[in-house]
Image (cartoon, rainbow, N blue to C red):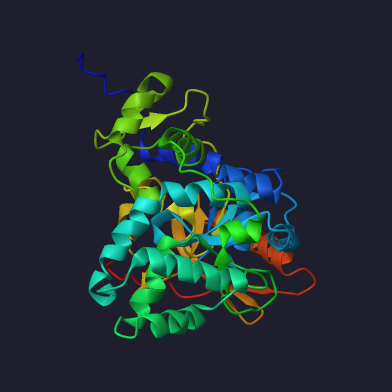
Length: 370
């Protein structure tokens, strides 16, 4: 086999601008919320607000009701998919991505096998399906019902088994902007009124990942999806892709027609939510997180919300009553400070129209050493 060329070098700024462009963070997109969720292959949704904050940073003219309406109309759903975490996906992606990442759910389940001794997982899945399709159930309700069938099993392991074997979605009002509601679950098939889709070949998902997060390495894609053994997929697609290398010599793949802007393209400040996929979807995060700021978005196991300045992580932010508190990792220039204030005003006006917000700069966030 002929040795492949390592490809041209892409430095951290080139990778940064390319990824920001595909994430609609160099300039806001005029796409609809549904189109954006499709292009981004879902939005991290561990909490209720992050998908709304993510779209506010990326879309021109976005209003929170745009996403809430899609959720109420069952065109987007909240479901555990990538990296075993809750994502907001379109209905079509919920039906296909969940089967694609099922091997990761199977691996997750092995950690609970001790608590599931003597449990027939096929019977558990059938019983859990009947329960949640009769009416949406909370995890506590599901746990108690399953425990009645297997009283010797570990209750938490039973609930995890139901989540891992079934594509469970969270039904509204959970996930709606400005509404509260308990986490109640039913199956994706029941909620969407469509049968389960077969697991797709991973090739198409690799191409979608590159369109939203590239240029990227095989390990980057595996980090994003929570999957392993994707090298052969990239090799199969190699004739259709361009290859580059990063500063460490790692091979990167990309779509031939994907944008790769000039590294000096201006990148306006952006306020991103905790767990934003921009920060979690690469094995090497230095395209967004400077090495000196590694770990500074975390306090224990809890993440801070991210502030980008010049395209890179530069601080954190938090709402405190009717004040947006900005905490930077270092001094900002006068122009940067003015731009951050303008972006903060825009974000609060988008998400909280009619509510006046003060914006102030707080103390520098300490390093956690994570």
